[in-house]
Length: 457
Ligand SMILES: [Ca+2]
Image (cartoon, rainbow, N blue to C red; front, side, top):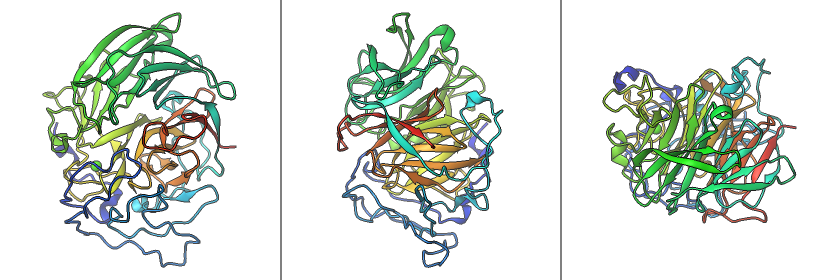
């Protein structure tokens, strides 16, 4: 099978401006809070109809792109190449300025997806609008650059710390929870955005106690499995995949262990953007492997058995919905961060295009944001929506789900807790979101970094 399978498939962005031939230089649109002002993108061609301007009377409040951004953010050079349509401010948050993509499937049309894959999709779902009120409270405090979280069947969770290389066990059951160290991953080389990143647990964890971590060494990124022994210590470390490209930025690093036993891995382009289009380069890819690191059965490219999708820049968000669809979030360069629905074998365009495109070789994103408004890392599905933690944007985006379509995004917690890294559904049914203010690019508050327990009450 080749990418030609996707010819003609196009997201509903097809009416939006196409960004073609953007000159992509430097590396500013990464996790940085305030990237230097990029060179003005060139060769941006608007081929679609001009979206409605903000002059309409329909909106009581507008959210031009880019919206309110992190303090001191770069001037409007990387602004959207299109004029954002008006967006109605909601009680709970602000709607995205760039959400023309859903056609008639608005955020209030009723989501049919709810909960993580483990729910089996059997729940009756209340038609979704935006969650009317979101509140946050500390579940755990005093963490150092937390990156990945994996919830255990017993209600605790494993948390990785990027720079220390520690794997912690947290309960989150008290006001601030308590933490214990399960172990330190040997060989972690933390530089820039690299270090100990994602963690996932086997869907059979209750029986096999198996977990996986993704981390950077001096020479590569790699995935290692461990067993959590009866004393809650990491043991039996085994490298299942190494030689993934590493850099001080664009290291990807999210792990998702699917119910079928296969492990999804996001790998950043590690600064070699052009090679994200090469199937024999493992950067700029989503990989899908068995628990021993070999290619999963049914992967789309027989000659490149690990590769599931390609043309990614720095993907750090990954979640499965109740129908088994794979959703991904990735950092844009200067213009568009992306939320993508992943198809096996799909080419997501980087570095030839950033954001939506009319080029039939590429799968267009479901939603995009200005990098100032998002710079997304982790995503999770909760209450009929995707929830996306944003670093530079310092907010939690709620993107209503309606099958394979998304509704108008709504922003929560804007600026309230600083940089947000990871979102996961906790065993208590709430959403946990981590801050990332101690990562060298934020302003730590007392108690940072923390895991926030998000409730909709
Ligand atoms: Ca893309």
